[in-house]
Image (cartoon, helix red, strand yellow):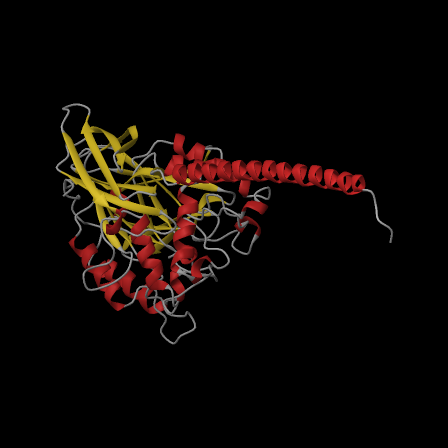
Amino acid sequence: MGLQPCGYFQHQASILDIFLTLSHYLCKTISLLFMKSLVSILFLSLSISTLAKNPKLLAGPMQGHTTHNSTAVWILVQHTQLAIVTVKDVNTGSILTIEKLASESKTINGKTPFTFQFYGLQPEHVYKVSIILDSQVVSADRVIKTFSNEPGRNWSFSVGSCAFIPPHGLRWIQPGIEERTFKYMTAIPSDFMVWTGDYLYFLGKDHKSYKGMFNKYVETRTRKKMEAFVESRPQYAIWDDHEFGPNNACGDFSGKNDALDVWTKFWPSPAYGTDSLKGIFYSFKHLDGEFFMTDGRFYRTEPDEKTPLMFGDKQMKWLENKLLASTATFKFIAIGSQVLNKMNKKDCFQHFKSEEEELLKFIADNKITGVIFLTGDMHYSEIIKLDRPGAYPLYDFTCSGITSFPFKVTRSEQKNNPQRVPGMVYDSQNNGRISISGPVGNRQCTMEVFDKRGKLKFSYNVSEKDLQYPGAPSMMQPVKNN
């Protein structure tokens, strides 16, 4: 190859220099833009992370067991180390404050449930609740109330079961849209709520781990429509199969201890079993009523066993002793499964024959007055009546389901159930209320069922005299709450 003029190389070098220079500045510009973008992304991520870790009130305050001088306040918080709840008497200005660390409860995914027990309150007083999370005031405008302890006062409670909320992708299918029924339930006045099972439904793998159960409770408690009702009045509950474990779960369910522990974190009950016996069962009093909230799952054996048990011997003795000691005019026994319906071929106390016979015999032999059973599970509501020779009739008020798919019992073989109080049946989504009224010595118990829009569908009344043994003296004066 012949020699090329020097200008050729100078020309080539000039082009190369320009290319290299442009490349340098282009890379520098791209690098600078990348660094700026990276810094922006990191700053944004840091801001989001910082924001996400700010303490937050996810649910509550919700009242649990409440008397004339005490109450339990439950809250669910996120990213909180120290929670402080203060109640201020709006009449007197007196203040009570309780502090709790997250280490005293259970935290999963940064979410922690707390229960605060307040004592020494005044009867029938209104208290303003303030919530402080890690020195930040997150709520200061909620109010709670204590109850009266004056004998002869009228009072009422809501009752219901089976609040199925389908997965997000299926919300367009009934009963997903019927979640709005809680708005109507909130508008129906009552002093407190009694859940007779299936407050929530473990779905899929929810019941297979502690975390899955915990997260299901978090999901349910933070649903706005339902939350508004739950926070509108004190709440009491028992469980049935769907918040205990899989469908129709019995006491051999391997996750039952996890289910029990999660329950104690989300339900501020007055007790969880006894010191010597695990479970969710407990009792509480309200004016001239007493409630016996049973656990029909933890000790349940399979129904096909030779002698199947729903409560177990020790819980049965607890229930019998509580009934024997009670002086209440009305004694409400809450059980997740129906009790008295002889035509029920599904989940019913009659399929646990030895316990059913023992309990009914105990009530008769000891002349326990004022007994009414509160049950759920069936996805329809009805009042079943059991006539007893030489004794007052027993009533089973089944109230179910709030949002679950209804069972059309009026189209089934039980359409003309002879045990059903005539006309006392409703088989679409519903909820109930029981009201106690009237003068001392002639108190009245009114059982009502409302449809999903709050319209009264049926009402039935029994007096305290209807729930006494023939020739028995009048009931004692109602006792005050302890």
